[in-house]
Length: 152
Image 1 (cartoon, rainbow, N blue to C red):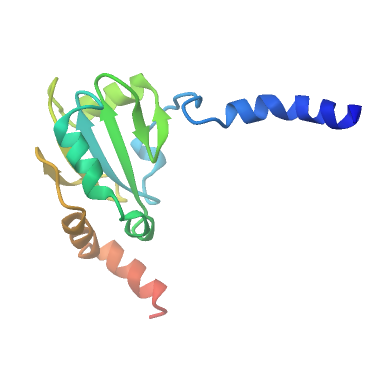
Image 2 (cartoon, rainbow, N blue to C red; image 1 turned 30 degrees about the horizontal axis):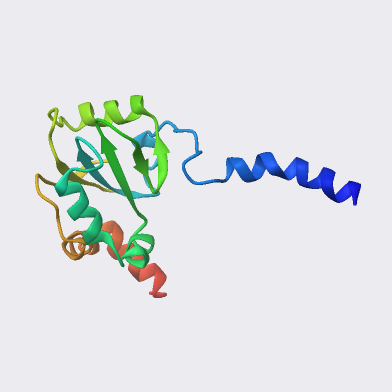
């Protein structure tokens, strides 16, 4: 019994670390994702911005499509917790991204970044995920990926 209790004491800190909302914000660099992920960057002043809420709503139910296209959803906020694929991003990285993509204070934007690290699309309004998928599926690199997946 004592051994079981001691084992539980060792596991308790791990359980606390795994709780949602307790993750330490991490740096986020575009170069870390080049050639492995496409990025859908959504810039907003805060988590309550109506366009951000609309964009999040539009992504509901498309997890398989995001995964199939190696597409990560990244929210970059002026105030509040920025997230990359549901992982906290540090404030410095968020500020660098806002500057890199010339997002004005208080501004909202959706930016699609290709695997090559370049901007492929920009909108000042929420965008339909179907239209993002359609654009990605027309890209030469994505065409190759689909051919390889289908065995041809």
